[in-house]
Every structure is written in C-alpha cells, then in structure tokens.
Image (tube, rainbow, N blue to C red; front, side, top):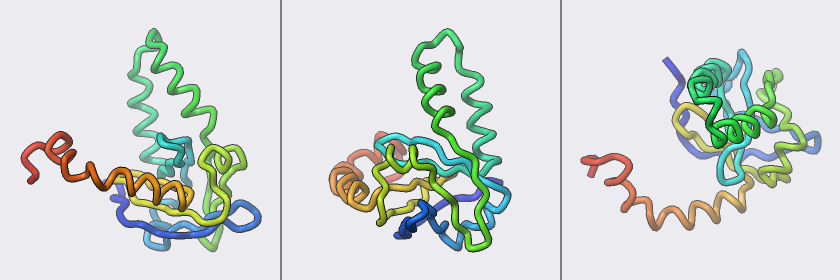
Length: 146
C-alpha cells in the first residue's frame, strides 16, 4: 500500500542544495526517490515504487499525442533519482532548484501519494489565491462530500 503524504513542513535548503526530508516520511524514501518538475513551479517527490506506477500510466499515453510527448519529455528530462543520506537529506539538483525558485526557505507539503517542495513565498502566494476557491471546488472535485 502506498504511503499517504499529509501535512506541511518548513525545512531549509543548506548551502550545498540539500533538503531535510520530514522525519515522518523518511522510511517511505529509504529505498530512494525521484524528484521531478511539478505544476505551478513546485517539485514533486515520489517514492521509487510510486514513480514506477506513474511511469506505467504514462506509458499508456499514445505516442501520437503531441501533448503526451511534450509532457513526458519535460517530466523525465528534469527528473533526478536520489537516495537520502543518514540525516534524511537529499540533494536537489541545481536545475530543479532553479525551476522551483528554491533558495533557502522551503515548504514541503503532503500531496496524497507524493510530496511537493515549494519556495516558501511562492507557496504562501499560491495558498492565498487557492483558499478562496477551496470550498467551492469541493463539489466539483468530490461530489457529495459536503
């Protein structure tokens, strides 16, 4: 069964571009993880097993679809496989740090089967915009949940 990632954490990048993973989830990443570009200029962090599942889904996309090809090129070209060190840190490659605008203060959020890494200021701005529409979207995203 896949790990369910929940919560919000505020780690910092060190001078070497390393990020400390939330202690609660280090075991889920012990065998390795994949960091990829996500939507809205964040990074997705997948346990290797979950990344393999996502990869299988993407393989089902038709190669004749330009959108699918474009998405997969960006998704896989920017991906980096990492293994946390003994302190639970991973190195975020420079190109991914630049893509997500990561400098020092970060926010790591649980996002179901993955974690997301955001620049702290970018996350606060995004959250401020989204909280207004959150309740109105519940009926569209999860009908009958109210």
